[in-house]
Image 1 (tube, rainbow, N blue to C red):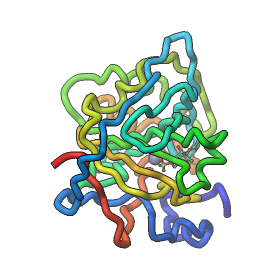
Image 2 (cartoon, rainbow, N blue to C red):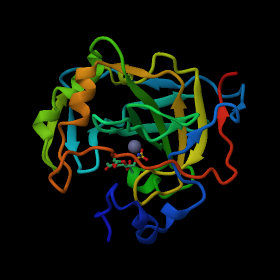
Image 3 (cartoon, rainbow, N blue to C red):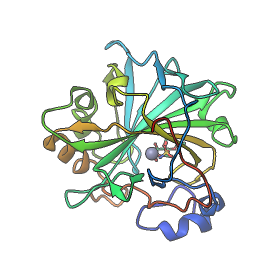
Length: 255
Ligand code: SG7
Ligand code: ZN
């Protein structure tokens, strides 16, 4: 039934939501040797991503992930042919035992993945845009464990203990949201796909950055072992397996 989907029950996604069985599904494995270099793919430009601390943002445990709602003043200013506004960002992760990015690169899965969801400004809302073929643009970046705390991810992670239970929300002071994404916005992969959760609408122009983000071991542990799921267990491994390309081409902005 609707809204009761789970990552343990992937088989039922395509019976309950027809689009989940479609031929333009996400995530995918990016085979870098097969990606087509496209010199017309311009650097992604983020506009208005630096938010003042007095602008409070809603952070919520929705039972599938942690979602940070974004004001629609954030915009994608370049890299895409159309104009998009930000709606929210969220994360996908694994467990202490293994990585949990959704996309993989040459078969490699990264520790975690951030998605910044944007919708086409020609539509009035995310809800309206997500059913349109040209409705959504999602920016994705991989998270890995490195040395040192990531100050931008800290702005989110320090609040996770306030939203351990499903449905809980809290308010987070604004910060530079662009700091959650790679500094290098020139190097990326691009393909047409879908939402990676039900209803799996095939309306997403995906950008997957080549540069990864580094979090400390402690930060990654907090991410994978704080939030609870609807079953009141730890919310872990909230990633969908990679889907078949069905002939789709993956473009690369670089050689
Ligand atoms: C997460 O992924 C949530 C969903 C999101 C879905 O479950 O972030 O958003 C909300 C507000 O619950 O769905 C329409 C939408 O953004 C799929 O997004 S994704 O394809 O970027 N993973
Ligand atoms: Zn996502």
